[in-house]
Amino acid sequence: MEAPFIELNHQKTTEDFLPLQGTDYIELYVGNAKQAAHFYKTAFGFKSIAYAGPETGVKDKVSYVIRQNKLTFVLTTALKNNNIIADHVYKHGDGVKFLALRVDDATDAWEQTTKRSAVSFSEPKILKDESGEVVISGIHTYGETVHLFIERKNYNGAFMPGFIEWKTNYNPCDTGLLYVDHCVGNVGWNQMNKWVSFYENVMGFRNILSFDDKDISTEYSALMSKVMSNGNGFVKFPINEPAEGKKKSQVEEYLDFYNGEGVQHVAIATNNIIETVTELQNRGVEFLKVPGSYYDTVLDRVGHIDEDLQPLRELGILIDRDNEGYLLQIFTKPLQDRPTLFFEIIQRKGAKSFGKGNFKALFEAIEREQALRGNL
Image (cartoon, helix red, strand yellow):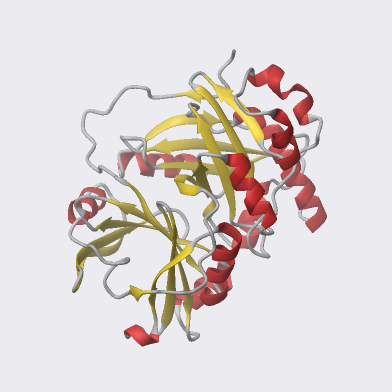
């Protein structure tokens, strides 16, 4: 069976100068962190972990930390105007500000990347409390997005210094979300290769997959994408840019409403996508749906799968296969009123790819939503 992707640069790098242990947390700047935390707990099954705000000596913002298995989100909002957080939310709406990456040495990570031309966001600094210390540093990437390097091997507190444990009586059952599989960034016209070079040269990533406008297109719109992966494969950042089409693509719509480049979606892993998506739908999470005809021929394309096809059809879960196995995936509608950030729920049964065989059906589903918004 034909592999549904192009694989590139299979050779191993001789030295991983930026060893990453995975995603430490994702921080969103939002308009109302208290309400956002309640939404993510109720809809997605996160639990309360930590808090920072006026009660902890922070006067200009509040942050709520929520977690499910190895998936940690920080939701931060400004308390006053004339504030960089308030400005960010005014410009972008709710969106991802920090993609925090766990490292063994945050000082070395900052030195390795800045000497390779990364623009510094924060020089290494040590945060301490009675639970130990965390070293944090950071660099800028596309748009106003920042990569933080988090070194927490000498810390055993709830989250990090500056936060207190946040205990609540309301902690819904989880929904089986495990960890960040990948995060996708949308960049402007003709900017994809610039940021591919950034991840290759500054962070030592490899371009492992590429999709052009022939791979990702419909009758009306197209985009191009390249998948960047760090040395051990724990961190993957696909980069999308628009391509010419008859009408406005989903990336163009994102750029218009986000007012610039940023994180388009966070893909979250699960070990049982049927159970996870069933529970998410029961909690009110809305998903994109493909036509029922998709399922009439999907097994002809992907071959045998372990799951019964009927619940996948009922839930709208997509299926694709590569040389190493298959995957199951589904995409939420945007999580806020602006058609920007959304989630992907993904279960990998050996597959290392990103669902190229589903692109056309998925993008047609997105276009139907764009048309309803008047943005196609």
